[in-house]
Image (cartoon, rainbow, N blue to C red):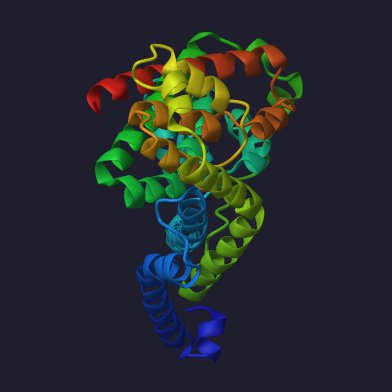
Length: 350
């Protein structure tokens, strides 16, 4: 029992009661969201559901609230669960593992380990310095932002468990195969020399040791606020683009350049997605609108993967530890793998 719990024995029970109350409020808000905006936009404002303005405004308002609620719930729950799995512990598990087995383990651990673009450099240095092979390290760097809880949760709620499972399988395939290929190419010469000169002193410290129940709950609350603060501009931009496509953009444009009838549709989607910086929350409304415009799901999953896994800011950050030749190879290998799974799932999901 922690000191806080000994001094305040009812604190845990009170926290559980507050969590249950918050969960009830969350469910009520989520269930009331769509009917409320139907009433406000279509009845009170008198806009037609078939008009560009009415459907676009409704899409923007309803999706802003819905995705924010989903993010709050998903981030909180997963942060509490992830408090038992840290980067330090992950690094210890991967150290000394051979390629192949190490790639598969790294892909699985990337799904359940806290990671974001801002931690790409320290994670890379720490893994390589701990003896994790380059290809295994790159598998982890691909999997962690690509197959994350936000992407999985939003895909599940918007498109169903089948599409979410397809995305997870495709993301792990890209991470494992892409990392393995990069490892086989023996690209260590294109890693900045200081990375290999870094030495880790002492034992790997478990930063979650001794955390109480209240500590983990507090971590979840703080993580919700931290992530929402960072991503809200991208979230609103993504929803705004989705609303524009939903209400105004001609579906013929997207069908012409990225539809199943265009043999280069997946390539076009990935090429657009690579330099387009966003995240799973920001890109999801756009994916939803493009799906409604008739684009095949495989193409949309490839587009989403390119945006999430090959973001421009992460490539800029990685330049501190990787030479341009390795970054270009990284983007080429991962981008090609994403194109491949896009075509594959267009066939399987047709």
